[in-house]
Image (cartoon, rainbow, N blue to C red; front, side, top):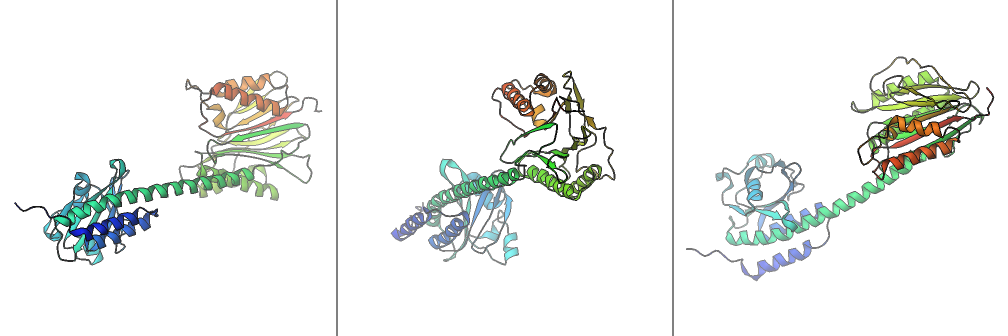
Length: 426
């Protein structure tokens, strides 16, 4: 029986050791792959090499870079590379076109002619399948068993180098994402009003806390007219989902609202224009619920549209009874509208409290998987209605925290409290 060939001389081992030393340095993934490909060709005296990375989530092998820069992607159980990774053994092919496992389509696409081949699995630390390295066309016309041993040894270093580069990219990507999210949060928070406007005879209080770095809720309070004691436009908007996409949607709503307020657009027309613009801009699976109203201190009335937003809570100062008002129309961004019919204005008597909440309040859960719900919220508002708006808001927040018993917040929380001061004239 012919004895297996040993790795050819100390020169080959020195090449592998030198490559291992080079690959131990930190590289970005694309640079690491290029170094592996170049070193593989040099160590195995091959004409061409490629690294096929394993995508476990899609069960595919794919190439980010080869010595000729081709890009390929295919099922991880296909062909020579698929068998190599599945069985985790080196495959040597002396005549590629005589092997039924060989796929000639890449040769056809590139004009290259594959003759001899070695495929070696890249198995990294903790037995992780990293991919497959293929070396093509030995300079002497064929690969032998000594080349198999050399390739297997080289592959161990290459697999760890790819793992290290991937982990480095993951850390850099995570750090960049965290920076981007922080910037997005800063931008979103910067558009919120720094000072709550004054409205004669009324107290206003606001609170907002996103579930993530950026949220799908937003609010705005806009003083209308030239004086600082006139009507106030009120916005509470809640986009589907949370995170960056939702934050962009509600920030767009706030920007359009501010522009409309500058040019004096009527409330009914404003809601129509906002809706139709969102229909044009948002994907089909996205929409925005919103309360948009104008608090008129002369009429003591809150004119509004509740676009998919509800319930709205109007607690009577004299009795503590609560009127729950539902949405007046569908959410924005679903269907174009030519007009919207406004619901009757809320008329506020002395001591009345209007509470506008995003659904994160109503749907907040406790460890028993119960929702906070509207009735608990109404009880709190009713019992604290004699207090000022900030104190009512503080009581609502305490109620939520006590109910949650430490259960994490999984949706954005936004609240606006409007209270008519009790001693104001009719």
